[in-house]
Structures are given as structure tokens and as C-alpha cells.
Amino acid sequence: MKIVIVSCVVPPEPGVTGSVNWDIAEMLSNCGHDVVLITPHPSRPLGTHKSGFKKMEINNVKTNFKHVKLNSFVYPKYNILLRSYESWDFGYKAINYINKQIGDIDVIYAIPWPFLGQFAFVRFNKLKKIPIIMNVQDLYPESFLNKIKSKWLVYLFSPLYKIDKYIANRSNHISVVSENLKDVYLKERGVSEDKITVLENWQNESEFLYKNDDREKISNKYLLENIKNKFIFMYLGNIGPVAGLEKVIEEFELLDSAKNVLVIAGSGSYKEACISLVEKLNLNNVLFTSVPPGLKAVVELQSIADVLLLPINPSAAGSSVPSKLIAYMFSSKPVVSSAEVGSDTGKVIVESKCGWLVNDEQPWHIVMEKVLALSKEERQEIGKNGFDYAIGRFSKEVGLKKVKELIERIGEHLQC
Image (cartoon, rainbow, N blue to C red; front, side):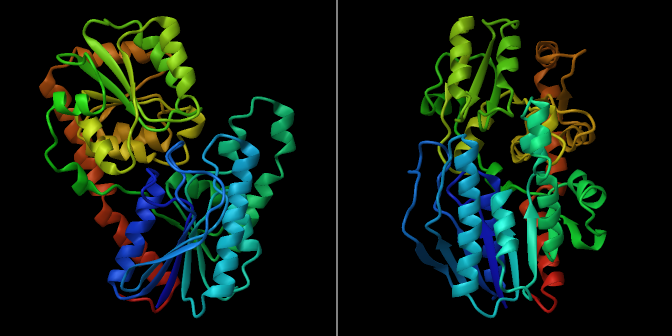
């Protein structure tokens, strides 16, 4: 069978969407199916790759697996207009390539950039008899509108809800990454239940099982000084507007600076603002480091942490379980998060008993002090809770099995 996978993210970019879609392509090609993976050129994290246009590139990865990198526009910086153009350009060029260059397709599994990329994909699809499974990673326009404080601007952009409803209903089937997302598409977008499947993202758990170097060697590798014999709180991921790291930094100032250190590992549009805040507060125990592309660096850095932090805007925590949390859990480390109890993130932390949720009554510094009061054995037990839960729900094996079953069902006679 011929299967086309469209992915807005591609390894070596750190986004879990890219690694998940690469896993799917490999799995299906290993089953003997003819797989074409269509992506843009890599552009994340910021500063790692050049932006702009690049020449289209086609590579045969292995037997039955072709990787097409389109010459679509990429723009990793935070700019709503250029990000929107990036979304549209990739979506339109992906479906245009499919319409003109690929024949005899049995099923298309599409994850273009939201929101315009998805619209371009379904609007200009000429191969309407080919089943399209549209994978939804986040809720738009809600995720975008929640960042706007002006009520009249929110009202101005309200027609975007109708466009998302059009995208969902125009697709033959949609897969979503959480039960909360499924409820939204059932109740607010009017999609019938038989057209929606929940496919949660995963991490390759085997990468977290290798023995890492000791703390001193890893800290030297990532230029982290003066952390010997200190308790390490760590945030690892994108330093953007959703993270809310400024609040963590402000409350970390209230802890004993001689015994504790906060490591912020990653890059993003708010990194400079966080560095400026640390300098303003004169905090010598808050350290920044970059994370090279690939899962290896994530595993190494998280291995030296005592506790992993997941600050998140409550409005952004309800639509899915972030890949960062899954990686945290596979690292067997306790987690502290600001997600709301009823969000997908909050539910996982509570159900797995892998950590704590901060709130107005229990702010960051109070919860962090509570963590510091635990013994090493107690923290290890909490971290183990997270690992055991993640193995049963967020492992690569579990995720690929669900994707395979969906594609077999939508592609009818697709068997392996």
C-alpha cells in the first residue's frame, strides 16, 4: 500500500511531533508498505538552522521509505504574520506536491502546521477520494486567542472557530492527542464520534534506560558550574510565553541559595527576558544552558536533576499532555507543575502520583520547600511512579500499535 505522511516537524528538530512521525514512517515501511514522508527543511531550535527558502530535497531513507523536504518557507522566531505564512506555505506546497507528484495513494496521514496549513491542505486537496487522517496536536484558535488580552481582538478573530470546524469536518478522519481535545471536537466543532480517534504522543523509552555519565561530567559538558553537592531543580524545554518561567525564577529567590540551584535548559523567545530577570534579582544560583538537538542531550541533562519543573500557562495545559512531561516521567524524576487539576497535564500528574501541582494556596516556593523536606528514597519512589505510568501509556510500542490500527481501519485493507 502507498501511504503519505505529512509532518511540519522533522528530526533532528527537538519537537516530539517530528520523532513520532518518523517512527510511524519507519514502522509502516518495515511492514512492507510504500511510505513517503513530506516535511519542510529543519528550522528548530532557533539559531540552529537557517531560515528562508531551501531547494527541495528527496532522499531514499531505506527500502520503501522516501523523505521529501519541500522548499517551503520556515520561520522559527515568534512573529505571528511570518509564522502564519510558514504554516500556509508548507500546507499548500505539501498538498500541491501530493496532487502532482504522487499517484495511487491509499491513505494520507497529515500533520501540517496549524491553522492555515491545515486549511490549505483540505481546501486544495484534489485527490478527494483518498482518505485523509488529520492529526491535531493543539487546539486552534483557542491556543492563539488565549494569549490575547484584548477582548475586541478576540472577538475580531472569532471566525477562526468556523475555519477549524471546516477543517475537521472536511477531513475524512481526525486524530487528537487527548480526551479533552476529543470532547471539544465532539461538542463544539460538531464532528461525529466515529470520525475521531485519540492518539497520544509518545517518547522512545529505551533512550532513557541507558546508563548516563556521572553528574560532574555531565555538568562540565553543559558548562554548568558550582552545582556540586547542591539540590538541582531543572526546567528543560522551550523558553517561550507559555512556559511562565518568570514566576518560577521570582519564587526561587525565596529558597536557600547556598543549598539549591535552578537550571534552565533550552532556548526560545523569552530566554533573554529570563536572563535579565535573573540579573536584576542578582541570583547566582540560576544557571542557563543550551540543549543540542536530539533526545540524548535531554536524557543526559534530566539525569542530573533532583526535581523537574513544568511551569505552564493554565490555559495551555488543558488540550494535551506535553511531550516535556512524558520525557520527565521517563527520567524517573519527581515533577512540579502549575497545570490545573482538571487539565490533561494535571490529571496525569495526579493519577500517576509522580509529583505536585502548585496553586494560589501552594505557590512554587512552598511546594519546592516541601520537596526539599523529603528523603532521597521518597523522591525516588515518586519518580518511579511516573516512569511506571509512562511505560503503560506513553511508550513507543503502545503508541505505534494504536497508529497502525487506525491507519489499517481508515485505509481499509491496509494490513501488516
